View (spheres, rainbow, N blue to C red):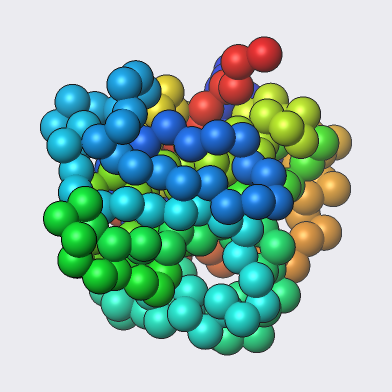
Length: 225
């Protein structure tokens, strides 16, 4: 298969999203996100959001909760369904969002969102499995998780981030642009063909991955220095 060479473009795996707040760099300690406290980097309509959130790296104990959070989206074929073992194997790629209560004092706990950053080559990674619990949509959680993953990509020295998604407007708000083809050279394409990862197959736009990608848009973000 011959890779396309669209300048500044890339590809990846379906993601579910919504809205969020800017997040501190992806470090090992939890990051508090209080949507109403955000002055910049967040759409106006989310600045009065009532949910308070803590972002942190996922732990093995989170794998079942992540699987359950993703399940309704996988059933609707918005996200790729995975076996539980896959979440354990990939747990270090995930950032999770925990609800810590509403500003009105209402108790809230447990995972309310997740997202993963999967490195595919020395300069590119893919945002995967970005999902928010349905009762927490439109409160900034998705944006916060994505910002956290992008900060992690910058920390790793990556230059580009790919996603495959139905949520075009959400990712466009973060600077992602629609692309066509596979934005890697022939030599890298050949090396990537050796991968058994389904997301890499989607990135390469291989025929065997087509059933998983129908209706999704391929988008790429060029990271700033």
